[in-house]
Length: 296
Ligand code: SF4
Ligand code: SF4
Image 1: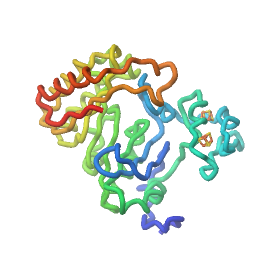
Image 2: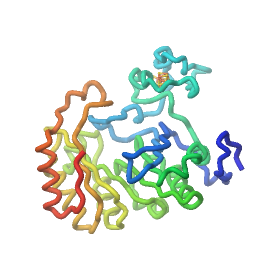
Image 3: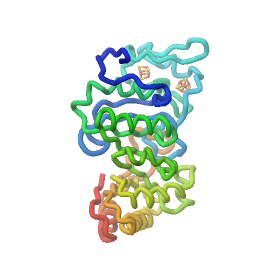
Image 4: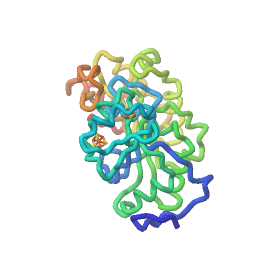
């Protein structure tokens, strides 16, 4: 057994099944990241640059520039041999370092093995329904993600939901798809040019995953964030609904109003949709045959 301060029941594992991942944050309990009470593992790094991103500090790896160190009011950050170190015991979670960082990163991201992640969560296992693996974009760390999901299921009998921007080709990760409980997929815009303008990335793979995972019955939820004027929300909701129905998916469609909290300053003034606009989009999805539509 690996030594743990929590007297963890997580067994030791051969190195080949214990890859490391860059982890932004671990939340032992959340009621808003999938059904039931779930632990959430946020992985660091994302290949999209969405204008309305609510956690931009998870986009990039720390380049150890040190700018955040003097800004920390708790003395939780230090520099040693050109690297920035974070002292979790001193950190008060004030978020100042995340606001100061000009590189969309965080000094608090940690390289952890799958065993270490499971150990940190093990005392919460009796109280959670499953895991949600989010980001950043968790699909970018496929080996770590696959191992975490497999071990959570096979050793701890916990299902995992994959919260993804859809940029990873999941048809090439059959082991992950088999072991996952389901996927929560963002479709940010249906039109390719609009998607690129909104996120800086194409959406071909997103739409391929929508169809692939939907056909397999592996889509738990599809989400679209509505920002008036930024993309054609009506077209997106219409085409996503059509795709879900035509591939036989019973995924729920979550239509989300843009909110400025946590968004980078230059995008905080993006317009928010009113309730009427969301209701209209929800009715459109229902009229296309989507069984479960929620507005947030
Ligand atoms: S959140 Fe960042 S700035 Fe705030 S105490 Fe923790 S390390 Fe320091
Ligand atoms: S978190 Fe950002 S500001 Fe702090 S050292 Fe890393 S790159 Fe620099």
